[in-house]
Image (cartoon, rainbow, N blue to C red; front, side):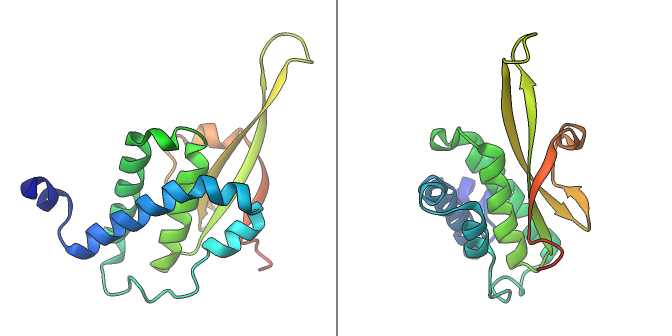
Length: 156
């Protein structure tokens, strides 16, 4: 077990980062019920960006993505709204390391049958960095969603 720990975490600080990501992911369903998306976004926007400045930013970005994806893919509690949870966690922790990312939400209609009455609204969440879709496995799929909300907006 110690070998597995050492293989995935080079330091105790990396383990603490993993634990923080895990705690955030399991608390998000409660936060969704208590707060509106704009309020939640303000809460998840870090005020103190000095927390992780001592670590190499690119390596830390890769660890944040790796830990987030690992937890989301293995935790049965997170089976709903995975893209939203992933995007919120990445937004929060990437902003903490000083990356100026934005979170975007979009919608599209999925046609369930040939009838116009059988349409279902589907949503997706993703990040933008330097106005480009960021850390998405399928950017083509993301582009078919109509962006409805972006935080922070360019005016904030």
